Length: 254
Image 1 (spheres, helix red, strand yellow):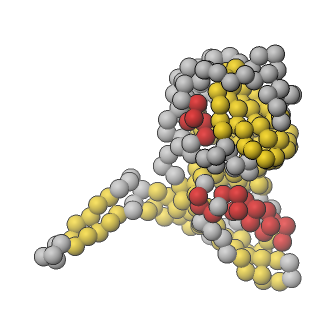
Image 2 (cartoon, helix red, strand yellow):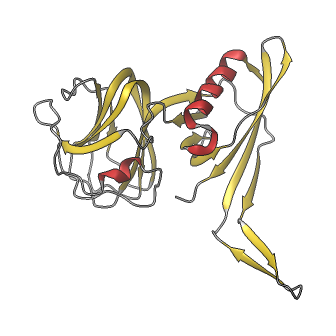
């Protein structure tokens, strides 16, 4: 399967946008008490899940101005407790009337990312409706945004390293000691030697939306999904309308 990114194209991670909990009744979203810790759906942290999710509970993302999305990525910490069928439905609208479904996600039995292709929609409000009772503390992130498919697969010389963020200090007597602050983050570097100006423009749009590494995003490498931050890119024009670049991404612990 081809590689791709999914990133926040609707500014759902901006602090001045609003995510609200409620229940969808006859196609309308009234805000109210529903999902416990619903803020976990859009906090860029996949380590802690939401709870008390039952059928028709929903989350509304009010993003201010119009924004466009065509994909959703949801992180599950384990089995959702539902045997089969649709467990999440997505909507986009400019009002509290949610309109028609733009995509769904089905029941899952294990941890990891699940991705839904959405009907491309440009609106001011995006909704996630739950269609079953979900096991507590299982759904920890719901990213609604754009899917950027790779124009070509990156060169075969993909590099990876582990950064332990060690801090080495030396005392006045010359004795050194280390402080280790995390178990290690994998850092990936992928290269493109010859891409079109269109793909370059798409990458820059994604970078601008993320503000470089300010936001986390999903990278699918053809086999596995990764929760990463992307460093700012630099492009070199190698021929008329053709470019090369390197992408450095840091795997996120949560």
